[in-house]
Image 1: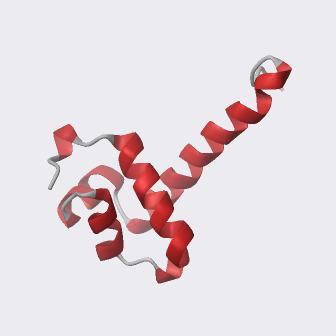
Image 2: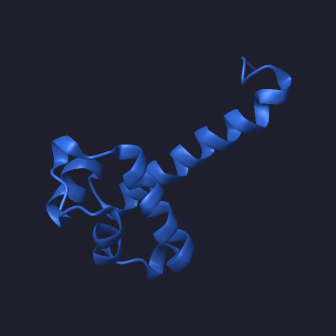
Image 3: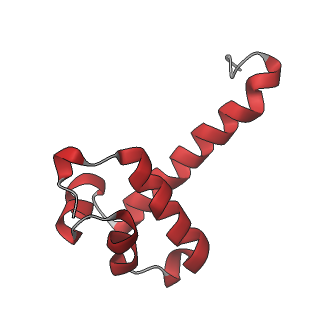
Length: 80
């Protein structure tokens, strides 16, 4: 299992996103998440706080990635 200081946050968020996509929020257990992310349960809580906070981080990461991609044809995200 990965130690917290060696945690690849982006990879962990991608793994968690896959679990949430597959099972939905309510159907995803912490055990599903730690297994997919390759971390200990304590590390999930230490790094992300809770399942809810992890879900928020996954959504924010997804939004950041895809919003940036969508805005590239317009010269970047810019300011609105």
